[in-house]
Length: 236
Length: 236
Image 1: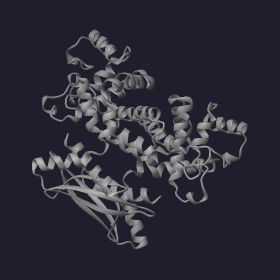
Image 2: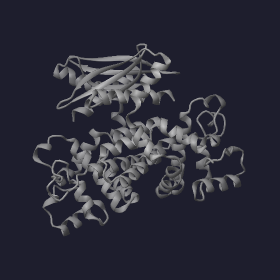
Image 3: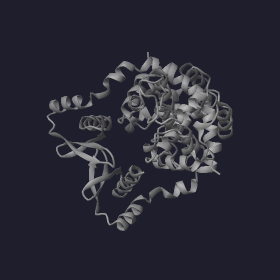
């Protein structure tokens, strides 16, 4: 069963909202308005003539940063032998748009979100709402409560770490497979970047001559991997 | 006077280290080894035959994330009327490599850092050490102590917010000025990026045909600004 249980949050009474939030978060919310805001997509937030109802975008900004810190610490402690490069990669994957979108959907957060009908098509709004929820928890109950929610509720039930580690460098193969299936005419255009004391590579991925992804890295292979990855992230 | 006062940290007795750290941080450090590690650059960290002395790179990873969250909250609270795009820009500037390097040098953190002589040339090691210090404080005393240190000691004394806000979009002019002075042959190559439902621009900045910066944005102007900014960040 998903954490948010398919409940239409905005149809609930205030009392029910308190109860359901408590059961999801693991603690009693103090300022329920913060959560309302987290679940309010820009498409339905205050029209100018109405009493201003704020959208979740500022909370998303805050939550993104707080989530980044929590996930960094989680990996830092969990993997004492990984170096900062490996930790950075893992963290990037876990806070990537595509990962957070899927996470939010798996958790069932989509049923809590108030949007106008035609914005539903873009999946990224669910990942954004998840970040906004983290921002709301932070303002309501502080860093420790956020950390508990992420490391004790979200990660154990919804993040497969072994999968996260494994999927690391599969983007190029995944892209080529897709391109063959869809008969895309594609090309990785690679250029060398000269820095003062080292060389890096940039890779631009084109389909029918139009750029669809780009990446940079210390080898052509890495740059191409990243170019393919950005392609998948943009397509959500 | 700079916060770190030109003291050669690694020459002090343990007792003096405790005292000097307390006066800098505003609280008593509990685990002094974390700070030693924060001030230990990879160039002098444990050779394989010796007892392993860990470098500051993992702490830098952690501190980078924690600092990002603290700075995000600081701007979120300070500017209740700025939207998430403006907040993101401000935060990016304050946690940028070039800004943190200068900050660390202004604070005098360089005198605390143990490096091999030939790594001193790269300024970015000081910004890295500052992030590692934040990581050390976090592990030693938790999020609230980090936040106090950053918002009560670092920002008031070393960050000119008005300057940070103003310098926002000056990179292109700054670059052109420099290019004219140095007689660089430069060019911004702009390409349009077609996304599903919107258009963006990428700008690649070339000097003598070699890429030296790149940026992306919703307008050509923004993409060029960012390309010029990345040029300055890489040059540190």
